[in-house]
Length: 318
Image (cartoon, rainbow, N blue to C red; front, side, top):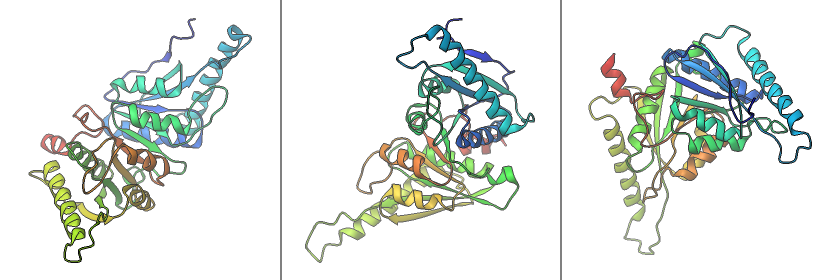
């Protein structure tokens, strides 16, 4: 067998594909749980993916390659057994593929509705999931990426508990509205309240006591936030949505909010402006260091084919 070719254990594909990176670590088990829940919400298929690679110097590569492949298969089967104990509620497609974990997952994400990865995983010989891999997926995948952390609880709707809490960082530019729409739909499916946060920083530099630059910055940030909300929900603002304007860095504020949130939603890109909100440099540290799961949404690529389509489309269909 050509080692560059993927090994597939196919399952009947139903609905959207939810791709989950698996390396057997606790974070990847949490990712499998979350991926199965997300697939079940859409009547989709869970695609469990394990990557393996050959070290640069291998004296007996023809002998080692089958062992690496077999080890990767064992890792995947063991993780699925640990996660579901043979009773998964959705169809599962197993993919064992040679290559770097980031490359394999981004490739599988090409026709996926959602990618779910652990924030940290095992390293070592098989070259499976590392924290840097989850960050690479968050930056490169064409669909939303859900980053899980060890011990993350399932969404409130999945564990039948009280209402939860979804926090979304509101960035600048045209990508903010789709991110808000995705966050609203996620909150709706999780039976959670939604808090939209925009941040601002004091950029005063004038010594003129009669010039109140601070008020101007705050007013500009509030206007920006209100405009993004109106753009995202022009006719039907979600009843569970509240907004807050915070002073300080977006990374610190969103990580703090993640301590009591069930999900944090961030856009993958943005633009720096006077109110200085979300940029690409924000989503990665939030996804890596947040306590709660983090949903990274690529601006400009959201549509009805993705796992969390804009809320107004789903409302119109219901």
